[in-house]
Length: 169
Image (tube, rainbow, N blue to C red):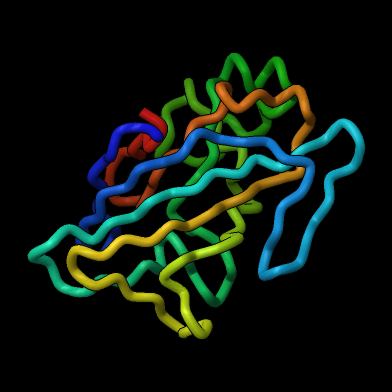
């Protein structure tokens, strides 16, 4: 696991987030449905542990798990511009103005699919996290070429209000 990072969403809710090491399996399981990648491709998959610190109010997880779209709206998989150019993802560089030109949010546009959320019981319309509680949210993107190594991709939180925060630190 990486270090925990404090983030704040667009409404001012604060969370502590820890990203697991990125993995690249040849499949992703979304809502119990398995998606398989073609030969030479994999999915990028990461699990975030999101904690609502004690002493706060219950907070919505919509920025991490939007149940209407099935996406993690404020989370992006990102690689350096140099790696993006080498791997064929340079068209993603400079698309999102909140990221510096040295970073390319490769999941911009398509978004990250929420494969699982341990706080989402009974498919509620809004998932809330009680003070002191945590959830594990598994996100996927792809398929991508199997040339993309896990160490080339970072996970960022971007609420659109401030600079993006690297969760892979």
